[in-house]
Image 1 (cartoon, rainbow, N blue to C red):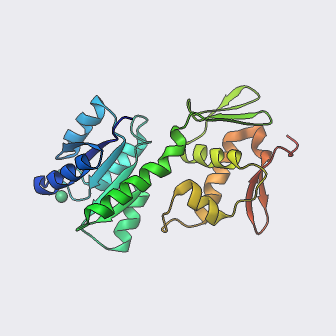
Image 2 (cartoon, rainbow, N blue to C red):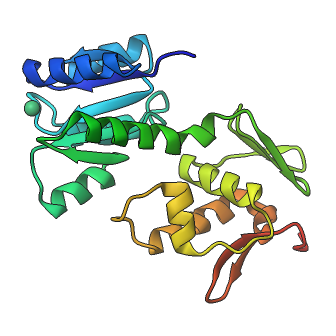
Length: 230
Ligand code: CA
C-alpha cells in the first residue's frame, strides 16, 4: 500500500523536522514546505493525501491558504489539519470555517497528532472507495465521483456528495441531524445541526426532479427513499 503523503506547511524548521521524523517512523511520507508558496509548488507537483498547516506563517497565513485551497478543484478534497498555538474558540471556528477538517493546538504530543491524522484520513476514506450505489434511477459512483439521475449526470458539491453517498448507502433509514454530522462531517463538535439542513437543501437543488427521494421526517431527521413518487 502507498504511504500517505503528508505536506507539512510550517516555517519553524525544528517543529517541521520533529513532525517529519515522527511521520516517517509511523508509515507516512512527509514533505516539508516553509511557506504558502513552497507548499503550492509541492501541490502543483503532486497532490498530497493530507496537509498539516501551521496557522502563523510568513506571507499568507494558514487561514488564507486553507480558504484558497478549499476553493480550487485540485486541492478542495485534500484533508487539512490546522496547527495552531492559539487555544481560543473563535480561532478554532475560523479555522474550521476556512475549510480545515480539524486542528491541533501546539504543543501537542506525537500520539495526539497521529491520532488526529488517522481520524481525518479515515473520515475521508469512504469517498475514495470504488463503490457504486443505485437506488431506483439514482446512481452514485464513488470512484468517478459522479451522480446520475435516469442516466443524466448531476452537478453535486463535495459535501453534498458525501451526504448523498451516506444516505444512499443506508437508504430507507431515518438519520437524525446529529447522526449525519457524525457520519458525514466526522467528529467535529463545532458544527451546528442547522448546517445539515443547509446541505440537504443544496443537495435537493442539485438533484432536481429526484429531490423528492430525500424526505424530511418531522422531528426525526432525513431519509432517502426509493418509494417517493418522482
Ligand atoms: Ca509558525
